[in-house]
Length: 259
Image (cartoon, rainbow, N blue to C red; front, side, top):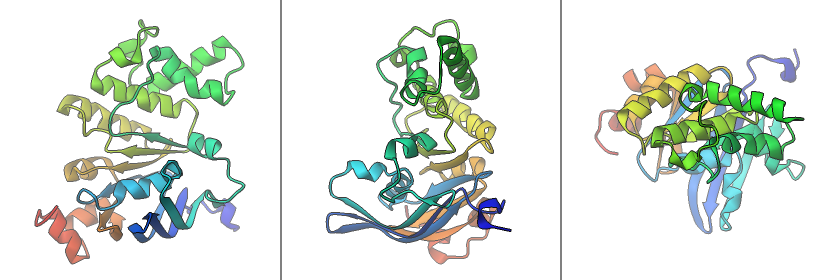
């Protein structure tokens, strides 16, 4: 069986990844596989490198002048840092949802239609209507906003804004969704809705979530990676990481000895 047809091939793989900001090394020799049918959580104390590493997966670090990424990162076996890689296309395939909801100052409809319009995914207004409705339904927002699609996205509540940002990310039909602390600015009810949404989206997209909330990681993920001081200390089945970690540093973090 060739590698391309191997169902066990990871959606994304990173090997020996190092990230530098100027002369400061933020990530040290990280290797990890991201599977299509599992939610992967990155946990660890603040400043441990989990968000920095997340940003290497769709080249968001390219926007930082001093950043330098070394190592090998692949999407379906394709080197995402090769000169041939179209970064705009890459970010359509590997979408991102940020810590703070950041809807565009446009209507709810236009927030979702923005990406499909840029990438030429709809040939007509009717096709765009279908994409917008489907994306808002997948993001669990359609019932709340269907009668006011022309209202500003910024007029929604924080939790609704974050779900709008998720709808915006999935409107271009990505393969991977990266979520960087997507609930840290939200109240418990909005957080529960986002977690429920992650469960519903699992399997449709490879999902990676950075969270400082260990309970959240335990609830939403099937794989957990523990980062500390820029290193990947341990990566495995979520239940194992939380109940029987192999590494002492993981155990110390899980039991609250530091962090």
